[in-house]
Image (cartoon, rainbow, N blue to C red):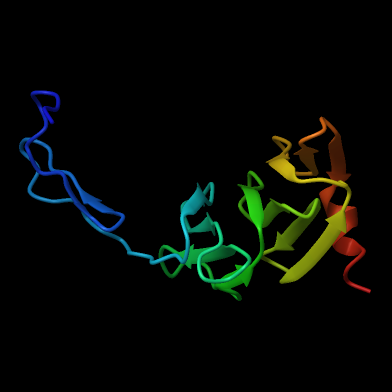
Length: 162
């Protein structure tokens, strides 16, 4: 397969890994390599490049997984893998809250700073989308029937402190 003239013939597929070289570049700096179980559904970087979240579909288990991977020593990650049938993941703009929606109609919010999880089941069917507002105060989810639910992030997480 021919590529653009400025790309060297350096693409090598090895089980979900790919190396690409550009003319004049000696190599890419690999920060980390992660093996996920099942096919990858989505990857989201923390807005400040401290970590990333990987959502994978079911492999040998009935559920998929959500993995968080630290990209450096900037932040302590208190969990690494959660089993869930995740459809979509999102970071709040400050990177301190992660949200994801699941096939069961549920939504999870996680506060990195407080190490608090909140689960809500606002949908009666498979959910598709998870988005934070630009200021990170609201979290919106949508499902296959067209229902959109908008939650206040702070009050949802605060309800889990009790």
